[in-house]
Length: 458
Image (tube, rainbow, N blue to C red; front, side, top):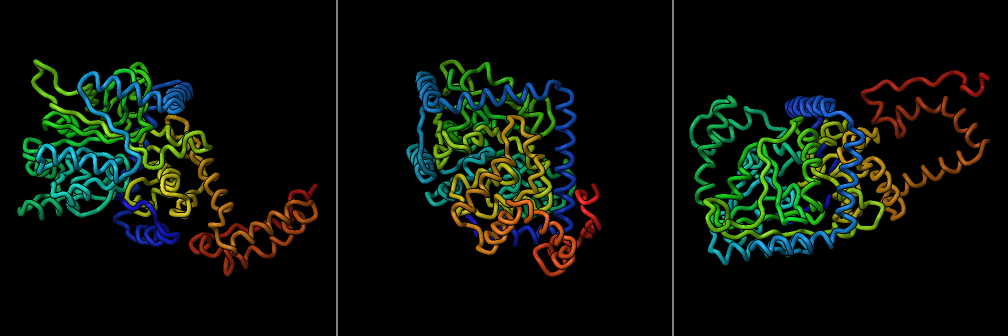
């Protein structure tokens, strides 16, 4: 399993390195700005945005609140069409299931489509340990696999890489010079990956949604590799979180209309692929065998809690593109899988807040993530809840707890509030030079306090 846990200092250490790299800053700024502006234009075109967001929230939460019933309905529908379904409690159990499928079919090569769930469980490492070669076929994921790196964005995994970076990586892999021209880079990727699709014994994909009513698996891609991975190999394995289920096929168009617009600003992504069971008699393509592996891995702990709404996430990435923290620190600081505001909420919930104590603080609490979320997840409020949990579980430093306790005590009385606000006029310069505000003020000018408080001028 990918190690989602991280020390309290990990975020700061990696973030400092990213902030000091102008190349990475330029790549992230330009990419997220483009994605954000495309999303705004696409939403403006859509109209009635708030009503659509509310409906999407209702669709997702209705499915989650009956998650066991929906999973059972999905199982019944898919198995009636010849498919196989497994619900795995842990990453280890999910990996073992996939490895067993590969062994039973004598698989030596697995072609993978982009999947954050497989990143979460460390499937590539599990397959390699079992003697099975696994090749990422999404362009960004393939680039990162060649460099032995993890995704830094849940939609654009290699968002920090420039065309010059990719050309250098492909040149090394092919043994010939690949010019840093997009068409040449694309042609190189095609040469390297084309035979993988034909030779793969097993194809592994994630799922954007699964439909309980019909047993349908839905994948959404822009490169078409997901469709090839799901169609050419004899065996198709789908790995997805239990929360990706929707109740009815009628719910799907509404969610898809928001997913494409929120992720990349498209009305609909280039390839929306629906698979319902293995190849039927008379059909010329599709797998002979399909397995859908539902991953729990901590998700069930969120049900019926104040964090249940996090399960409604459709992994569009729009919260990352508007987040002022992510746009500077980049994805690696958040850990190897989920980044940005959604990752800052989800990762501590999956591994335990004590295992990722820095992430709830990776936010300015500006609320941009909540405003951008197409399914109205109150991300900044959930981050505040996690911060409260950190305090309640004594995961914060004694110095921080003492400071906020004194502040709370002072401001709980009229006299204390007036006295502390009066003294603040004299202490702000000290705080900006020597106190807790020195880091913030190191490259900013701290505004001077007014000579007279507003209430004193009345």
